[in-house]
Length: 110
Length: 158
Image 1 (spheres, rainbow over the protein chains, first blue to last red):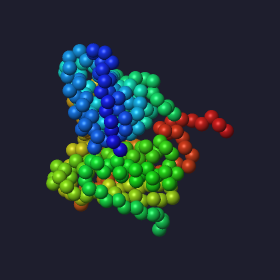
Image 2: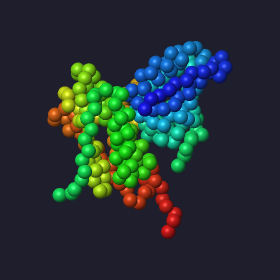
Image 3: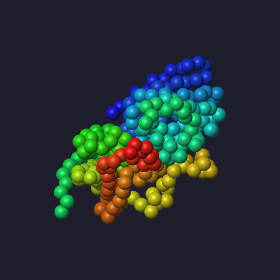
Image 4: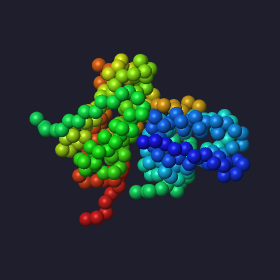
């Protein structure tokens, strides 16, 4: 019921966030505090690896909406990678797949 | 009178307990024979309802309790989430819900407005009573013949 966030740098311009666990109202604030400052560093691309995220709800969607807004303001980029089918479905239902850069190789498909 | 089992869980109105309630619903729904996909839907729906109740409780007093009731029927699970605090403006909330549309301005995107919309999308029936505090009552049916996640798949087997 926790979320671990691992931040690493693939190269100078790419910050790689590996998430593992659950994103809900309890863990979302920590995620937001980690991801938002990264989207404000000019020229940066923030990649988020969702492979080990086994639960997410609207509080998580809210974090990625703020992060996306921040990238538009600061000229940075956000990419969401390796999303499990269940998590991807929430982005789909809410129409956010239209505006988010989400890796299309969805894991654990039906 | 239709018979059913009733399970009640009471938790402090704090975000750290949302995961605990998710485990409860997962256990009950699994016991009833819901599919993996339906159980995931139930987990999201109940978390959204509790998140709303927690936010509300926090705004009012920073404390309080949330009562969750599970009505276990032969063909369905009824979930009740009661936040016994004041009431929020439902008309206002309903106006705010709905999926993002491509012609919406990105600046106008709601960062916290998808909760009720998701409950509605993931459950079969949702009712809200705001007479005494706010009570969300949501129902999901057990489908004996599974027709796929979005109900839009056609089986080719005879």
